[in-house]
Image (cartoon, rainbow, N blue to C red; front, top):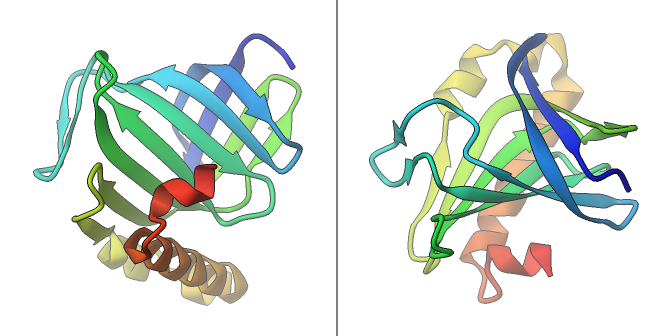
Amino acid sequence: MTDRLTVTLTKAGRTKISYPAEPVADTGTRITVRAPWAAEGVRDFGFVRFEPGDVFTEHFWRDRWYAVKEVRTGEGVLKGWYCDVTRPAVVTGSAILVEDLDLDLWVSADGSEVLRLDEDEFAGSGLSATDPEAAAEAVRALDALDAQARSTAGIAALLA
């Protein structure tokens, strides 16, 4: 495994963000990387703030329609998990390519808050018309993540 990877997140054919990440593990099905908060400044969602110093341990699957990002402060305090509904990740050489499908799920560190996000963006994306199979997979992925987050084992069970 290379000692540096580049994660590129695309949306509707455009690069949303690209950033360096440190590889942690690769099972052949799931690749895990660690990266600092890559966007500029602070992003305050109201339910969580992502800010410089935060560390993301990101799990990408080659066969699942989502990615799960464990978010911690620079001091190691767990903030929660940000789950992106995506097409399965494509890993080639030192690159991880992921296509964002708009749907997201936030799970607080204690599991008490599970929020489905961006369902309005997904509905407005037109994916249901242009790629109904992908749209159906995206909805199934969000439902599966939501159910897992609300289960006794929680979202962390996906990462064990």
